[in-house]
Length: 309
Image 1 (cartoon, rainbow, N blue to C red):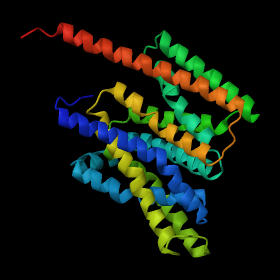
Image 2: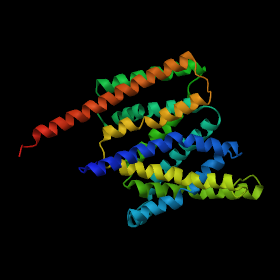
Image 3: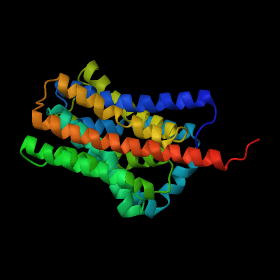
Image 4: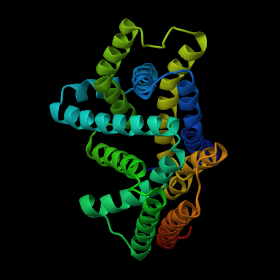
């Protein structure tokens, strides 16, 4: 990953990183608005996929990656991997959309708090990435938090685990795909775009669709695409220009915003649930501390290895 040496570029990249996580944090409010207008989770998902295609194609064109898209479309193995990643992200999206409209926003936010720790474990298991003592402590604290959450709700926190595992799996698959972010996202949208369009057409023919039935609901459904594509592109742009440790700090913005929204909307927050989040937050804090100390050690090593002018 490259980082910008220009202060102005660094500030823009930091702004882009904050922007993408702010959008992801507040997007539950948009899904809830659609839900109040009578739009079901699968219809929201279908429009989210379909209307992501135009901005995804625009971003590919702006990045000059049209040739890469044509290469990917001629490589069955890469297409297969992107087909799998599109399925995983679609599963993640439908679980999230359903959970925020069914009053489970706190449980959904928990899933994204534990996601970095699941990524850490997956990196060690699949890519032989080294985990230090702080990493093991962070994962242990998160595991305790999930166990306490299970006690709090009287069952395994399926929503939290499913969201973390599905998006973690998406990241693992994308790590294996030889395609840039914009190209991969466009191909993923194409892979699930046909069934999404078919479902929207079926809803319209059976009289159950909401697109075109009113200016408000139609505008929300159209906006679902840009709300999906823009933060992904902001993330990809920022991640190439600011240190990964900064992105590690920023990634906790979105679940924190969702958590606050869940509290404000009156979701049940018992003592046990509070205890579970304390363990999760402690794990996240240890994770961030470890990321910061590793990044600091690297900077010091580079500074010491660089000859003085």
